[in-house]
Length: 230
Image 1: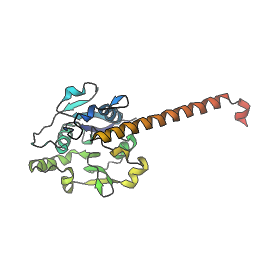
Image 2: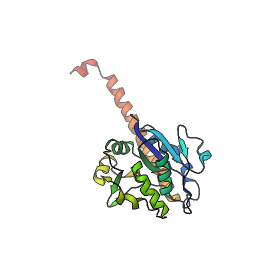
Image 3: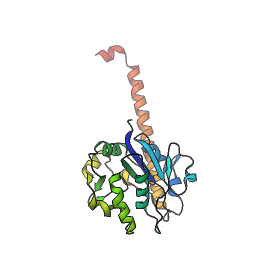
Image 4: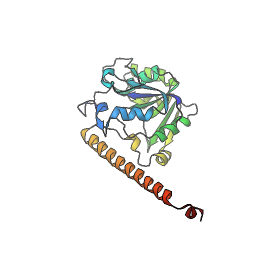
């Protein structure tokens, strides 16, 4: 798969208050959630950045650049992580995503990248709501984000009025991700258990599909050449 000249920024600096433990390190299937997110992103981007205050916690990750928050605010928030990752990114654009979205769609992300056309923000819009932590931001957003942070306004979408925002409609998103699984967050113990169950179910479906495909191949191999020609 072609890697694009866009950076990926994973936000892993939250306190996980609702979960009570570092959700990035929770295991889903045979991998930690942060590994699942990073492994989805790596084939698409030429740079993957992890914004975190504790890089040593993520010793299991390879080919990831660690960045810490460049601003110290009284209230920990995603906007600071977004600003820090976008500022430190080596590319003009960066795809921003949190560490707790284990069902990301490579096809949806690739579509967002490939359809960039000079805008400052490329973002899915589900119903009447943006998905600001599954979006591509351009470095042109940085001064507006900084002004907002100085005003202690941590709502990510607040600066959108100052930049060119091009949404990906829900209709289009659903052609790629019909059930909107990409936007599933894992914030609570219940959501974690649901995510593990879904992951196991999807794995079983995949395994069964692979078995059926192999059976079909074997059946075709057993067919006589005369049958194939008829």
